[in-house]
Amino acid sequence: MKSTRFIWGAIGLTATISTIVFAVGFAYAANQIWFPKASGDLQLVTEAPKKESMIESRSKLQIVALGDSLTAGTGDNTGKGYVGRVREKLEKETGKPVFLLNNLAIPGYKSDQLLADLALKKTQDALAQADIILLTIGGNDIFAGGEGLFTGENQTEFNPEAAAKRVAPALLQMDKILQAIHQANPKATLLYVGLYHPFLDLDPKREGSLIVQRWNDGVFGMMNRYPEMVIVPTYDLFEQNLIKYLSSADHFHPNSDGYERIADRIVQILK
Image 1 (cartoon, helix red, strand yellow):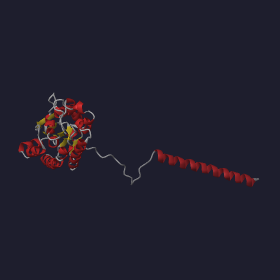
Image 2 (cartoon, one colour):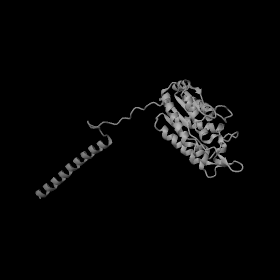
Image 3 (cartoon, one colour):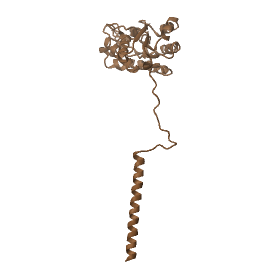
Image 4 (cartoon, one colour):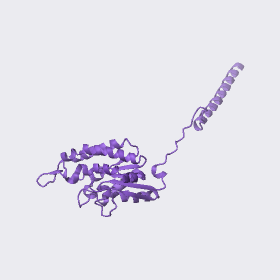
C-alpha cells in the first residue's frame, strides 16, 4: 500500500512540475511573440528620408513655354490657353508665386523652326531660368493644317498616307529639340503635351489614330532618356469628346474646355 501511495504521489508531483514548466515556457514564448526584442545583430529597417519634389523645394516657380499654336493658346476665347491655366492652378494648389517668364510659342511653327530658335541666345537664356518648361510641337509637321490630308469629291475623306510619311522626319527633329532643351537647362522639368487626332470624326477607319500613337510613342522613347522630362497624354481626352473640346472655329485647336483639361493633366503630374 505504501509503495502504491508513493508511486501515485510521484506521478502527481511529476505532473505538477510538468504543468509549471509548460506554463512558464508558454508565457515566455507568448512574451516573445507579443513583445519581441531585437537581437544585437538585428538592424531595424527605417524609412529613407523623403526627397523633396521640385515644387516643394522652390519658394517660387518660373515657367517658360515654347512651341506652336497650342502653347500660344489659339482657339481659346479667354486667351489663357493651357499655359495661363497651368500658372493659375499651380499658384492656387501650391500657395507659392508662379511666374510665366516667357511664352515663346509661335502659331504655325514646325519642329525645324523651333530647333532653329533653340540655338538663339535669348531662347537659351530664358530656358536657363525656368523651373518648368511647357512644350507643344509636331502637330503642324504631321497634319500641316490639313494640307494634303483629305481626298474625295468634297475633300472630306482622311488620307492617312499623307500624315504617315511625315512622322519619321519630324521625330528626327524632335530628338534634336529635346537634346537642345536638356543642354540649356538639365534641371528644369519639361512637360511635352502629346498629340491628339483632330480629324477623328473624318476618319471612320481610325487610321490616323495609329499615326498619332506612333508619334507619341516615338517621343516617349526619346524623353525616357531624360529623368526630368514627362509626356502629357491628351489623346484620350479628345477621343470620346472631340467636338466638345475642339474649337468650332477651325476644328483643329482645343477650345477653352479642351485647354482646361490639358492644364488639369499637367498640374496633376506636377503635384
